[in-house]
Length: 191
Image 1 (tube, rainbow, N blue to C red):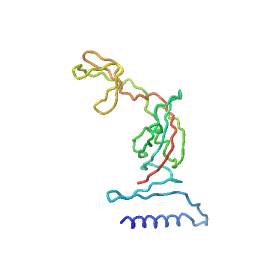
Image 2 (spheres, helix red, strand yellow):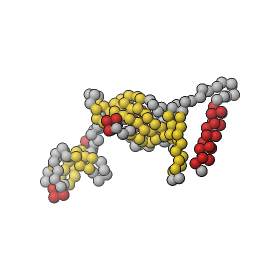
Image 3 (cartoon, rainbow, N blue to C red):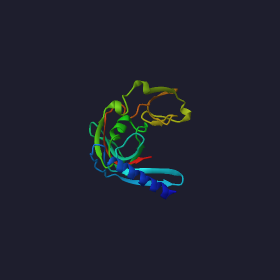
Image 4 (cartoon, rainbow, N blue to C red):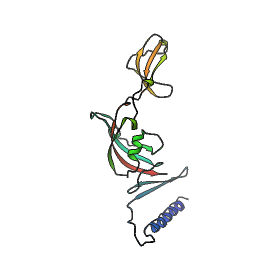
């Protein structure tokens, strides 16, 4: 079965290449230098991983390395420092909107530096994201500056603690900040 699909893929690619190599007006189109790897297992359909002239588009899974800095030059995150590339599906909301925009249209092997305004990053800091909730000290001790995890999985910083309430800031720690990312696209996988 694997050989049949691979042969079919090669045949289809050959037909597409032949159709693209000429047009009715006699003009020719230069061939691309795209390399493709077909992966297939009994449990999953074939996917095509591509490097070369293909550009990232919505629905593609991209693997990137990135370094994120603030306007003052301080680094807040880096996949390079962790030694592990970051993968996500373009256009599905898995990343901040500015990151999606920065990767969409990029080719594998390309490195770009992009500054994202607050609205395209984690948004403005908002007083509405400061919550005062009931607190029972017998359920665990809290101190100002602690980070707790909400029921939704979202982290929050403890701002104030009283005998009966706790005030939490659930704004993202980078809310209100413009962000700069150096992004290197390593691989584009088109399912």
